[in-house]
Every structure is written in structure tokens, then in C-alpha cells.
Length: 163
Image (cartoon, one colour):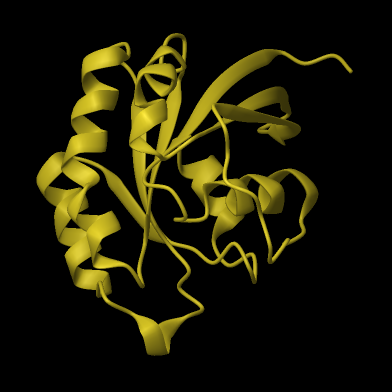
């Protein structure tokens, strides 16, 4: 298929926050409840039309484990956007955001657009990080913020169109 523009996006954040599920929901509009840990990176693509312009999105799902951090850093090169993801039910994933953000800013171009995503919003009874905390972190760092559910698809489309 032909397209007018090609944009590379990277999904970053701790292991188990739902990056792979977000990728699958965005590319295939489906949820897979059991998912193996990402080793290195996984890749997905989607063609979208925005204001009568065809855009091919290359979405790189990076491994969240510390042991793969050096590999992940190489995928920032050439990226137009990054989706920084944490799990709203696991406080430690929120606590690690500053480290992921520093990594992204240090290893990418100055024009990288970053959106903060609190994933698993459908698990409200298990919530460990409230909406205001995510919103405030985003405000402090000049980021756009959304909460999503890769399971239900809530706000997944909006993530890409905000970037």
C-alpha cells in the first residue's frame, strides 16, 4: 500500500504494563489475555488516514526488563513519538517513569513527541495510582496524558491521534 508519511513510534515502560497488549489492540483491535514477555522488541504496523493523508505507523514494542534496556535505547533513533506506559494497578511502574523519560530524552531527537499512558484503567478496584497522579506527572514534564484499557480498547485509538 502506498502512503504519504512514515512515522516510527516506540512503546516504553516497565515489564508487564501492557505495551504488547496496547500494540495488539491498536494494530488488530483485539486483546490477548495471556502474553509472553517481550524479548528485545516486537513490531507492528498500521496504515491510518488523517486529514486525507495516508500515514504508515511503525510501532516498536520494547522489552521492559532492565536487562534489555541497552537494546531498547537503540530504538529511540528515528522515532517521531514515544508512548510511555505504566500500569495503574502497580505503583512501582509509576515510580519508574522518570527513569524511562530520562532515557527517552537522552537517546532520541529533541523533537520526539511523548505521551504518558496509564494502562489497565478497566481494573479500577485494583487501582494503585489515581488519575490525578498521572495527570500531574504529565503536567510537570510537559507531556500529554491518557488512561487506557488495552483489554476493552478504551482510549487506545486516541493515543496515536494525540501524538
